[in-house]
Length: 262
Image 1 (cartoon, rainbow, N blue to C red):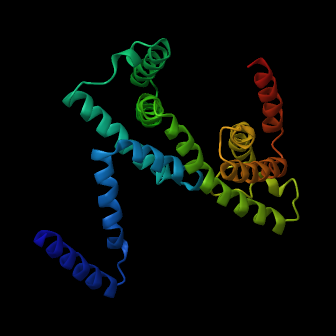
Image 2: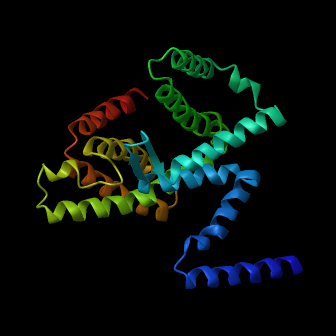
């Protein structure tokens, strides 16, 4: 406990020193320390945290260095990838049933093929960057996502943690759209910087509408959950109409057909 007090006093003193010099990034150290702790002791929380940050992530590009990254989600996913690889070498205890599944085999073959074609690419650096980005998407949300979703409550947590900030993005987008008179032209870009165009925005809205139809009308859920789910559903439908994304509208029609088949 003495070490806790000592480190706390030193941290406060350093922050006061830096703040007097208009340096504020040191205030993030406790947040970074907590995230680092979760990486080692509760990886499922990191995956859920990534889900929460995804709708409000900002894409940053640097044309000079040919870099484009989504903050803060992609650095978090890169950390998951690195730790997953280290853990595989250290313990080698990943569920082999998952590795032998046909879908896993197809995914691994596609990654191997990307690696081979990266070596023969005209611009290998660009191809290797594309392969690396693919890895930090696939590993967290396929190989670790399977383990996360074995607990069914994590599926609902994942959906709600994504949807709550998405609701904020919908309000932001709708307000911007209102300022431009809800014109179709402005509907193509008012969701920036959170989504790069109305197609991606409409796609994610269409993806979640069937889920919230289920949440709203499944009687096994509590009345409170169904009520809030219905409010979110109404908001998603309103946002989808205003997105002017015809492909997203059509996809919902196909979703109804899939429901009938099921």
